[in-house]
Image 1 (cartoon, protein in one colour):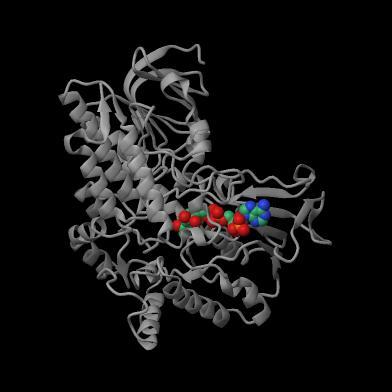
Image 2 (image 1 turned 120 degrees about the vertical axis):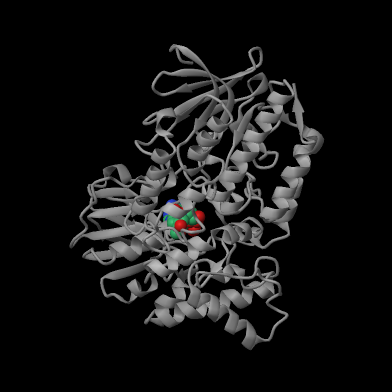
Length: 536
Ligand code: N01
């Protein structure tokens, strides 16, 4: 517990990524005093930390951007359809400056604990700089995929080469020219960094445990005519996003109708033509071709086989192609849109090491031992993933009523109401966190921050101080979230959506997979007559 001075404030926001920035903006509009704490030296969250070579968004920027300001939409110009990390970070900085958000942010400051005091009904929030605040509301905008898994390999401390983690990439770009480099991990981060560093290294060793389904991004510069067209139809685009399942709707950069048929309702020729059309569009759009790709194994198999065939077509050596082909249901792990990823395996200086044959044993001073073989290395890049959804909040000691630890609760069972709050932790909310919808994260942040700000305003109108999820309503929401998850194919593979990548994490559906419109309905119902909440 800090001994610093205790300042009273309406709201503490943890994290100055896209969600945190918007929460500050919205809270101020409501006349609340707000203080945001951010570990990094700048804004942007994910887009501040993940500055590895090749880091790039895979939802078109016109969709992956704030919708709250028509002026912002019109004045900002994206240079590429899928912008790279530097441009998205610049956008976050522009938003912070344009709406004067920085003055409420303390950078390079980590929140270490947040404890609810039942007498004062305030959250005592402590930071690693010794500051303590008493806040009426505490908002965790800590990110859904933001807590990196620290690489733990035997002998790593004695490895003499360079070490990099994609999600904590140094500001000074490392020079890999002529070096022997290994990348561990072949999720979206690994695939992006591999595609990029393969062009600069002497030899590259790709250590793959589970292959991803790579799909072409087909990035392009944004021409002036295209930008004008998109800006003219922003209103319609936002309306469609808002009413869509996942919040990304463009196919061939055009407004596309939502899927309406099962993949099994059409002939094979029609199905393939549709997959080819989506494939040619790039990005995540193949996901939208049919209604049941994530619900029906046979339907899923048609898409998975289509994607595997594309891998075989792009990789020259059939034995390597075979190792790059995933065998689990497609979409149950995140698709990885990429640019020339598979083609790097046609380079003679790139070596695929399949960890299914032989696992990583340990590091030595000079390299890594896989099976019986030592691979000499100058550098290793870890793209080994994140403790998704719960990880970032677990790293803060959050204690609710009667000193209950949220981390301990969630080790037993993941609880939430509406993916934003949980019983026993009054006036604590999170954005883009556990049980939130699998949806465009920037638009979801806007929706959830608006919802929270509206709840707080209603609370003040009713002259109440504290709001908390009702235990029974929460139980129903958790049940529904799990039932929806279990009706999909997600449980059919090992994936972070179910918490499988963290040893000991209880297997549960971490996301709401029921689509955004149905989620919004739950939120609306909870607010009707305050059915979902206890106030006091
Ligand atoms: O993390 P991941 P990520 N030994 O968990 C492997 C978003 N994102 O950072 O699967 C060997 O997907 C692990 O192997 P396995 C996006 O939502 C978006 O790549 O456990 N390997 C896996 O291959 C994405 O889904 C964008 O068998 C080990 C990899 O490390 C999410 O972030 C770009 C290992 C981790 O893959 C996370 O992606 C980047 C070990 N001990 C990220 N431990 C875009 O917008 C782990 N692995 C494009």
